[in-house]
Amino acid sequence: MQINMRHKMKLLIQGSKVDLFLERQFGSMLFTYKKIFMMLIPLILDQFFINIIGLVTTAMISSSSQESVSAVSMINPLSLIIWAVFSAISVGGTVVVAQYKGSGNEAKIKDAAGQVMLATFLVAIVSCVILVGFSDVLVNRMFGAADPIVINKARGYLIGVAISQIFLSLYMGAFAVFRGMGATKICLRLTIIINVIHLLASMLFLNVMHLDIFGTTLSLNIARLIGSVVAVWILMRPKSILRIYPQNIFKIHRPILKSVFKIGIPFALEQVFFNGGSMIVQTYIVHLGTINIAANAIANSAFSILYSAGLGVGILATTIVGQCIGADDDALARYYGIKMVRLGTVFSLASIIVLFPLMPVILNLYQAPEETLSIIYRLLLIGIIPMPFFWSYSYVMPCVLRSAGDATFSSVVSLITMWVVRVGLGYIFTITLGFGVQGVWICMGFEWAVRALIFYLRYQSGVWLSKKATN
Image (cartoon, rainbow, N blue to C red; front, side, top):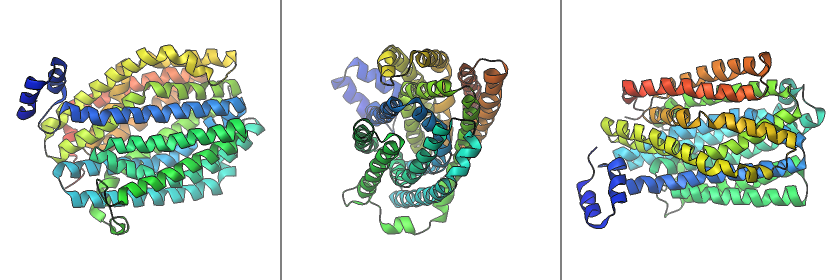
């Protein structure tokens, strides 16, 4: 792929061999390698920060009791089902904003930004009412086999998380806009503000005041409320990189909404059924006892750190490839698509090499019993073996396809593989064959492999390039 010649001459005169190598690998007429990595580094730090704070918060909850950890792990898939809906809308917004950014249409970018903010907020209001109003029914119907103490804590946690989603929706909508524009530093600053507040509030409410589950949800609501206020202010202030006005939010733009939902609805359905599958997996893990529930929750929390960098690459792929599509450069979209997937593989492997040796220190935060720790280590080892080979092709590649507008295919594949492999085969391995909770993690690796093959074949076909979301 041709590098911007003026930039190349500057590198030859002033730059190092490393600079020139990276420019040859990632540079083009649209992006320099420095621009790409200036966007990528904040995204990776953003994901690491989110997952590390989540890990520390889970560790604080763990210090209260294993019942609290179990309650949180039981409710998380349920709350994520609704969260996934407006998360998907924000992904649709990122793709649309990125494509309009690539085409240079600033008026359309502002309209898309406003419509994403409105849509995510309305969905969050509806989801909050449903989750709070039916909290007793949902918890008792799905997790009635759990200990009564765990059930009561799960109900309180569900209500608190449901309320916090109203605030979450606002700053997620803002994040969608910033990422589509490539302004990832703003997202990182917001993430730091939100998560530092969450951490400090959690320390106060959990470690000092010992408020247990109520303290967890209170700290979450305070952090997300402040984050939403700051995010909206950044978008609407006079010096914003993309100042939006009330009319951008409240005036309905049907073509833009159609473009957003063209990406968002398939992805939302994918996430709903994906988390629904996770919830079903959780229901049969419940029968394995509190120790296995807690071990699975802690292992998932710790494992999230290992793929944080890969998630950052996936978000970057949405921005980079989306802007290439908006600029009507299919060749460049293909070029960056495979580059992003390979970059995700490199970062996944690097994360394992650097972070896995630190797991004893990380897991010590949870103060888990020795019996629980032994299960956690087995689960983590099962997870890291297939990760360098399949994870990036399984998760970064669909971001590439989706950024061009090929959302339906990505979602259908994800749904089928989730339900057939992780849920169906997972039940056979976990319960029927007696592998226990390790069976779920073994089947997770199988699922990655199947997804990776299908998504790679779709990329090679080039069909995804004909699915552009915007006009």
